[in-house]
Length: 189
View 1: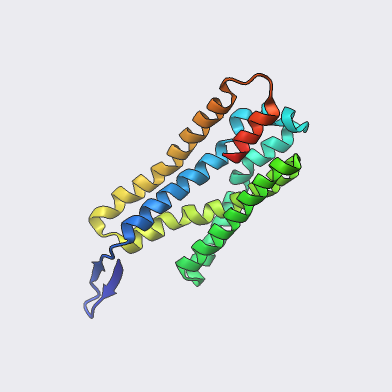
View 2: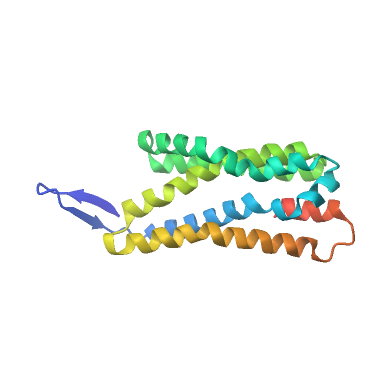
C-alpha cells in the first residue's frame, strides 16, 4: 500500500496485492524469533550438563535477547529512519541466518561457544524485526485495519513463547539421561 497526499494533505491508502503475504511472513518471523528467544530457559540445567559448562553461560545465552533489546531497538530506529525498509530487513535476515548457521555448527563442534555466538547474533536481529511491526502496519494498512493487525502481530511474540515451551517439554519428555542428544535436538529446533 502506498500513501499518497494531495494538496489538501489527506492521506489515501492504495493497497498492493502482496502486502498480506509480507505481513503473514512477518508474523511467522516474529514467532520464530520469540520461540528461539525462550527455548533455552526451560532446559538450562540440562544444557549446562550436556555441554559440561556452568549454568551461568546458558543463562546469559537465554537472557541475551533481553540484554540486547534496548540498544538494538535504538539502532533499528536509526536504520529505519535512514535506510529503505527492504534493506533493513535484508540486514536483519542476514544477521539471523548467520547466527542460525553458527548455532547449528555447534552440533558438529560439540562446544557451547558456537551456540552462544549464534544466539547473540540472532538476538541482535530480533529487535530490528519487532521494531518493524508498527512501521509495516502504518505504511500498508488503513485506519480500520491497522489496530487489529498490530495486535495480531504483537500476539506472535506470545505464540512463539508457547511454541518454545512446548517444544522444550517435548524434547526432554522421554529423556533417558541422554542430555547431549536431547540438547542437540533442541539447538537444531
